[in-house]
Length: 263
Length: 254
Image (cartoon, rainbow over all chains, first blue to last red; front, top):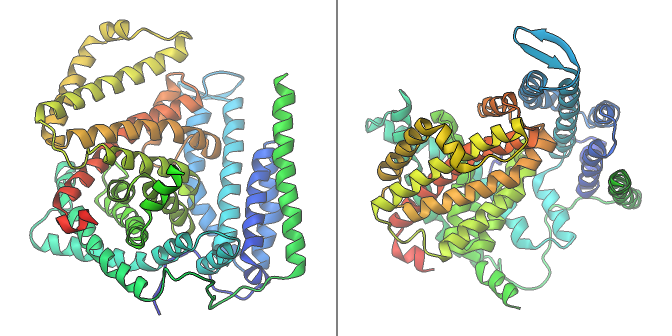
């Protein structure tokens, strides 16, 4: 069994068992929701009121909140510092030394952090409860070409092997005296002797892999069977139609607002 | 029908395998750079390589899928930039059709390209920051005259960079610069709208500097990209040029 790298956390909750496309549409609808409502706190409400309860149901909320925290925190600090301190106009809330903190800047930072929270949160909700290969199988059934699903699934499976290869190359070049630490110039100079062997040796693999999959009827015409299939239900099919309608309505509403506010 | 034919011609079984290996190269090299703590990304070498070896359509697909997979597995923030990566791959493919990865340029030409790039970059940054302060587009000659010393220093750095760093890969480096400028322009709206103009990384200091000089959010993000992206893509194209020179002829022939 090849190990593969992904955000997926194994589990057997109702969220894990949902059909992948249902979760994909849900993540898309929730993300769009944060960009479409004109109030800044809408994204926080969606995150706390919908994404968090769903991930508690899926049993992944601890990992999800931790991952969101790790990803969003550097963004949040940057946004509040940059947009808060350097907004340059509007009502001044207070001063920190020579810098002024403006109300508009803080409001913008608040809205941006909410959106990032929503984008990352809804995406993690999908990625942490869905096996990438099952998602690809489901997409293939919708008519996405097999070539694309092949690329995604193989790539995810060979990432760990390449990381091992990169580590081997670093060790090998270090043992020959290459300096990978030290000042900027030394580190920059070590770039070529590390990158070139990695890329060239990977390209040599390409030929073998191509022959291997062609020998296993990769190009054979006709329908192909799926080893592990996801279970779909009638209710989910209805839910998906409703979500598609909601997504279209949200985009339409936003366009309508844009057009009417322009006049 | 010619478009469909050109798409089909780009995708053989070998190309598909090459694409998946290239995406892994993007991720592995990106992480290598992170270990070396260098202030660039270099996470599109694989994309540029596929563009160079298998054409613009394959390059575009590689870029888009690379960011989607990277988003799904390691870093969710890159996901929404997939269209930028697709354009980078396509541009690398078009550049390859013009032969930039196979031909060697004279070194004086590389020096000239380096000089022009550094001059243009400085001009761009200065005009952007003074534009938002005074509300009218300053004229390039005035700006050059006002900051003559800065421009002379910058021009010399550029010339030296081109001569010693790009060496014979002048054409590839130039294609990389143009790709980087395009990437900076088209990625700025997403960075500004989705991520509030920041990345949480060291380049945010640049955004802060532009905001402090009075530029708008979109303009600051674009300026930050215009400083870091062309350089990043130039190095990527340079490395791909080196790779193509080192590849066995059998591999290139396909």
